[in-house]
Amino acid sequence: HLDERLTAELAFAQRHAAPLALIVVDVDYFKRINDEHGHQAGDVVLQGIAAVLNSCVRVEDLVARHGGEEFAGLARGVDLGGAKAFAERMRSTIAGTGFAFDGTSLSVTASFGIAHNQAGISMSKASALMASADQALYAAKHGGRNRVCVAGSPGSYSVSGDDASTKPRDRSRSRHIETAPVALKQEASP
Image 1 (tube, helix red, strand yellow):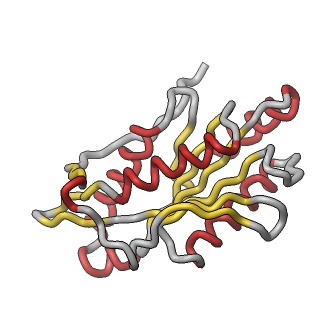
Image 2: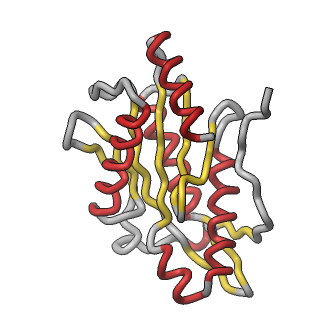
């Protein structure tokens, strides 16, 4: 569904010179959660991340699980500044949420990579937009995690966010959620 929607949204954006942002999200140190707390805890975290992401998006946006502990979001009609603010809001919401499992609150962060069709890179194919977002995500992971990186001209990225390893979280503002199975938002079939 994500691949089909990305292709359609990019075609629409090109035809109408409209902005389109692709945001990829990867849960930081997810293997550690599975190793220390078990795969059931990992499932709870993934469901909680899906709930957080869905709470941050508009009806016309798409959030999809892209594989493993990775999610992707499409936001149409959002300029580059808006895409950065959108991803930063999702990042800070995840970082401020405690995911409860078996009486334990699990603190989780995520890294974000953004590719935008109007960010100075020629992207006429969905695969190029995805590759650019993945490269920005890799830059966020390599740069310290728990941050947002935006793909710019080839090889350059802008960065926002906090490095969780160097800045303690303010627990007084943390949210805690108990998760139940959560469905990702999808458009209804015609």
